[in-house]
Image 1: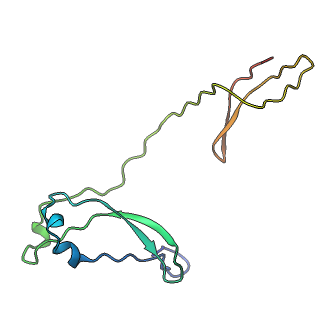
Image 2 (image 1 turned 135 degrees about the vertical axis):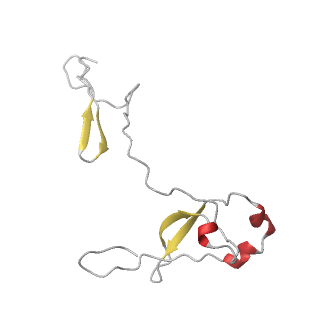
Image 3 (image 1 turned 90 degrees about the vertical axis):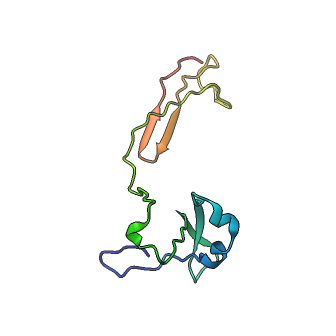
Length: 126
């Protein structure tokens, strides 16, 4: 479901997980760490996937209380990290020669996102 402050929450999509097949599959029950799955999300009005979510499935015996389950996973969001991206331009193609001598003053402008353009130094007479 999506979360809306003003309007009601809307269904984004659903996914179906068959627990019975997994419970009776010996290979799945033998795994100590259950595999992480990527599940497609489908909306009833569309045959196209509306996205993907990442999960794993554990089946615990009914006689074990939820407080007694030993495995605890930290699923909190990881802290944001800062990174530096460096771009090296080794070659260019089809640069028009705009000066009378058959040279150009060339620089490269790149966009990491639409609001953040970066430019290289100007290379004169190249």
